[in-house]
Amino acid sequence: MSPTSYAYHSSDGCSGLNRCSHPLKAMPTADAEKLGKRACQK
Image (tube, rainbow, N blue to C red; front, top):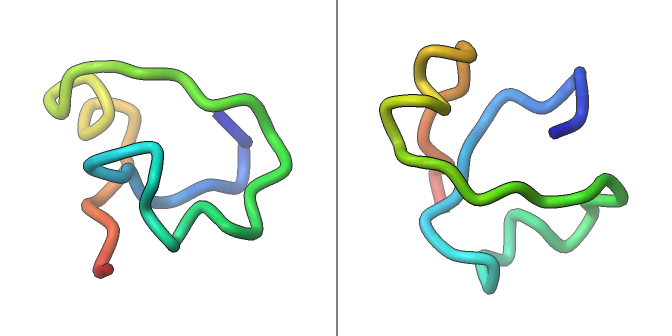
C-alpha cells in the first residue's frame, strides 16, 4: 500500500515484491484497479 506503488500482484510470492518494504494488503482485483494500480508484469 505504498503511495508510490503502481502494480498489484497475483500472489504474495510474486518476485515483483522482493523490493517492497511497505505492508501488503490483500484485496480484490477490481479494488486495486480502482486505486489506479495495474497488474504486475511478472
